[in-house]
Image 1 (cartoon, rainbow, N blue to C red):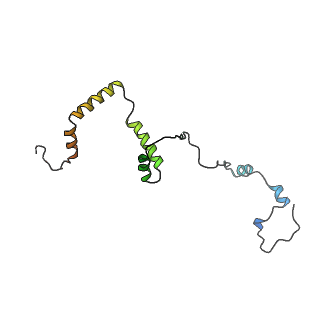
Image 2 (cartoon, rainbow, N blue to C red):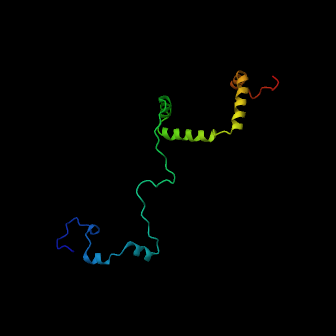
Image 3 (tube, rainbow, N blue to C red):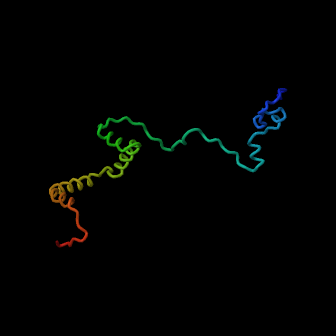
Length: 133
């Protein structure tokens, strides 16, 4: 398939079309890599690699104040919201009946002493204060 046309003045031999002889000498890349003792590179897929566990799309109706509060903190608000929801799963697991009963009794006792405990919690202790003072 060699052409009889004359090459232009700004001819670059690296950009030239292959001759019939060059085409006949071409070999598959797998042969070249094998001759060099190298592993044939595997082509990468396009885009981001697939995750083992993908996220699920959900539609929820939330108070505007909740959405505004997360959006006010800047980009990534949906990720932060997901983290808060995930954290709430780990901090409040389902309670057994006995655990729920103990928690209810504890809340009742705290409500009775509530005002005293809230006031104590707000007053900071000084580091150099004596325990009997």
